[in-house]
Length: 578
View 1 (spheres, rainbow, N blue to C red):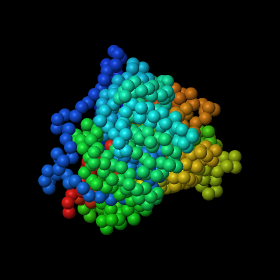
View 2: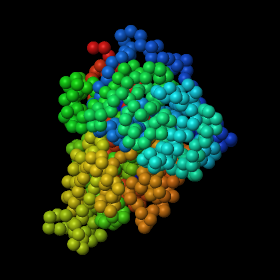
View 3: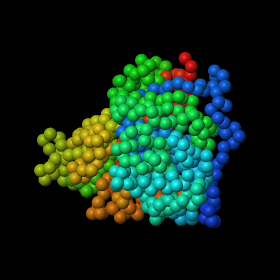
View 4: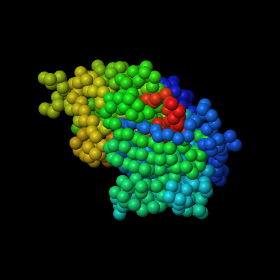
């Protein structure tokens, strides 16, 4: 097992994130804040404060105009970015709404966006933001403190009368409310320390806190399926949404409040983006080759090489956050036996999975979080996530599981069956699970794969440990607090841990500490302790692989941005004149 480090991991592709600066930067602010509070403000330099027209100079620079056609795998389930749980929901939401802060995709540092500056108190239970005063929604209404309060309250608390779920609750645990201090100042309060909140204010993945106009917040969930009712401050505006077919957004000409860190202000270069929903990998690849689309997301692992050989550019970025994991439910038979859980950790071969299911755009999962997250610890090598089928067999035999007539182990007349469910949200999922299934069968475990579509997956989540004993998924969030969000039994409870589980209180206490400090040394210590419990002590998590988002684009496509959660932004994207 490798101790946590803040050094960058080896690069697997040019868009791979680094793990270097976030905790150090936040710790500096915390030290200063302890003396009574400090504002963190970053303002654009003279060179950064440029409009789009400043950059478009001659044929060699970005070109204004054009329609960009993007083929994506997952459906766009709703125009409301605060309610969308898929990758397509997130990337479209990121282009019609903005966030308070921006997380640098390389360093992890949190920098200004719609908030110019902020301060927090010593015990990190209150955050005060100074807002930009020049931001408007696409309906012309102002972005101000009242809007921030209304958004955060509905995002975290929900609104049953409008059928709005509290989708932000797992990301803002302990949220008490938002106070309007003055027109452009807000104070966000928590009932406990919230070290992850600042990163949460920049969050761009599923169920994100993208700001919506007051008129949108007054609409019901059903009314928000009309894209004209979903009004944001972002660089693009909805034109059309046809579920499972396409979504169209158009440029907002007066947009001028991008994150200063992106070094360019002004509107998008593109006039329009058409997101085409193309679930089949072969159809996406065919659409790219024929010119029906200009780029595709979720390139199949077997298509990466041939597309690159044909002159298309392959760009990939690891989705920082959890690994693509297999959670084992300790409250369901037979995963209530820790020896069964340990055998599943040890009983399959990562090298086989890599060869059969992955490409060079993906890396091995070695912990509950990916190696781009500060606080990551490596449990492969000689650790509990090694490949050791003989030890796996010994553990099963120790628990009384004997080999049955068909090779699957039996105990007290019951077969050793692992009933799994997951969602096909990342390209290699099914192939990876099939590789694991074969290896586990060799040690006597019947690993039953159920990869479900969105609605069926949601229904399975409700059944949880009453019908299944294993779940596969991943959670993007470029902060170690993702573990608290995902595994704390009082929050999202990704392993369906009940009060009767022996490790319940240990996990609640350990995971909660990830929110209690921004001191780098302390947070690294707590990160390791939490991972030790999840991987070593209770064997609840099996890390499969680190998910990536992979784009293939025509050579005339330029500057698709991957952010810190590997979601895409298109304000700087442009199409070369052909």
